[in-house]
Image (tube, rainbow, N blue to C red; front, side, top):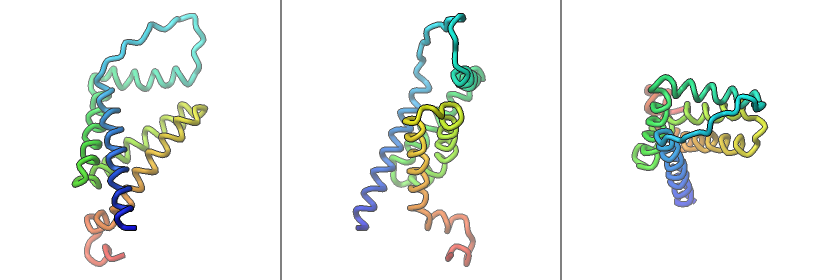
Amino acid sequence: MEKLTKWVVVSLRVGLGVLFIYAGIQKFISKERPPVDPTAEVPEHVIKIRSLIGGMKQTGYFWEMVGVAEIACGILLVSQVFGLLGAVMLVPITLNVFLFHLFLEPHDKGELLMTSLYLILNFLLIFYDYPKLKTAFLPGKLSKI
């Protein structure tokens, strides 16, 4: 059973790591968007999404910084040696991706399910390595809890 658990954890780390490496690389690949027809009716949630992502891109650094963070966390997860560090660093990213879909695309149940799965898997990876995390942050007798 212990071997199976380790195999599942390694698979989850690699899967989540590769997913975020890919997502991070995509932030650097320019995608030409067709011009928006000003007479077309645009749903409110699309306006909000375009404003959020457009704002991150217009800063000149933030969109790319998110991409670098995703790639770095993905590499740490895939490495297995630094998997716990990668999982902990990935929490704000997976939480933000989940909240993005929860508040801006709640009608897209498939995306919401996938992003909630990423968040849950990330927390499961942290929970698996909780004993290591506990000794790092809780001093002495508190780490025995």
